Length: 386
Image (tube, rainbow, N blue to C red; front, side):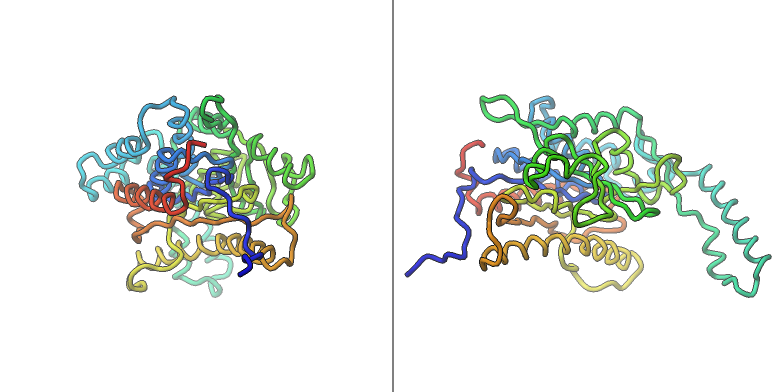
């Protein structure tokens, strides 16, 4: 029997270049942390990492642990975060405390801003009522009184600079050979212009340019060849600030209209296509778990999951299409195109709306266990440190 010529040549796991696609989502960030610790314990070294939203912070922590700068593991860091937000273990008390006082050095309730926004909204509604009362819906006018800003970010300036420094100069140890650079990719989105900014460090830009065969295709201010509303930029403190800007912070910020890129593209895959294998770590699941929504919180959960799935599926199917075309010899594998093994690690249990406030050790432990099983199944258990 002749061997199947349509299958790509098998590569031993230790010889495959890998990338991590880390999706961030509020209280589900523990899912990514569990995967990253498992990757550390299996000595799996990525050449590229993409991250959105809160995963920017966890990737920075991962780099600190990997290089030995921090002696704790990621689970210990998660436990510290949980104790800070919910020291008593009573979620109702912790939620009330967050609502009234916020979280130190992260966010505060927008008391003054909310009142100011309310007054401005009231003037706008009153103006519309006086101008064309017959065309104004009273129900809509009433709802338009309430501001969309509920929180004010209180991150110290050095917080953004610290993360940007680590991501810009990201390195991982390589046995006795010292360290080697790691490509970093993250994003933000401007709803006014409809543009996505994708931020690259030097190593990510170098690998993407080499793959494309063009020396400046992924340079600063360059548009993506196929997605003309995606623009590549350098990593700096402002980029990190934009990438962590939540809807709840409002939209009247001076100097920037960008928001958290996870709202637009929750998992970044396309820019990781330089790798042989991509571990895609998703803080949601590709299908709705449990009964369909019966109440308002469940409906909001469904909206979030469908919204996050939409953009992801587009990139996922692109990778599958190229793989199938290569397998069927409709395209030639070479420098520009190659088969990519996409390995998905999705969160086990449904979490949403009210769970996003709180991180969970169980989410971390489940992700760690699932990642270890995935690595074992792919042959990394017996692979040497690479």
